[in-house]
Length: 197
Image (cartoon, rainbow, N blue to C red; front, side):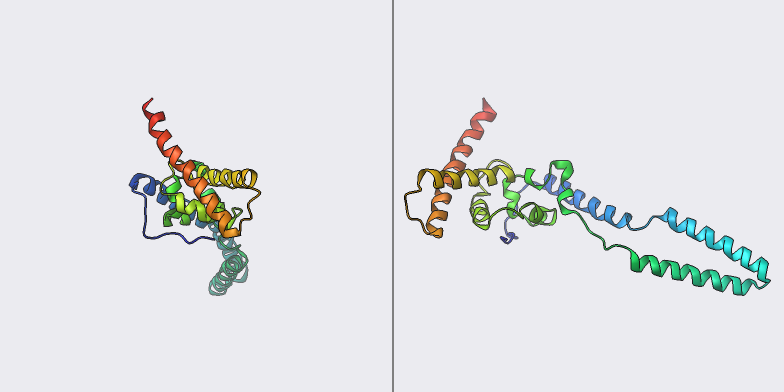
């Protein structure tokens, strides 16, 4: 898996604030699902009722209070031990924005995007395709998904139209990089024409 690039950051503070907000919300939701306050309050009421019954039945309120405290601590300890570990589904962090694939292509190397689920999104992408995409992400005018598809198309183009050449893996990667670079340059020229026309 390629390493994120901490040196370069796209300059879009509004988008970065939105990503941070979604990360914070996802973390707080994970923390809230492990146990609810209403469940603890109900357990406390049951223990208080048990304490009242024990105090009235035995005539010793101190003993009843010690039993209730011991049962309460035992219940909390059991809940803590048996609680499932907190798991943050990183692919769902940016779901309201359409997922990490809808981020601008430059965010392929942005640390904040890596924190917001991009590694989980890139799991099935071959390393060679990621290397080319990382080299081109700063220039590509579209989203991460668009860039990955472009590199995939470049790979298919090299495989279909240049199959007779005896490429080493490095030579094939260079050829894919060259074709993908041309495609990105074409898109960069095309985008201003589309937005103005």
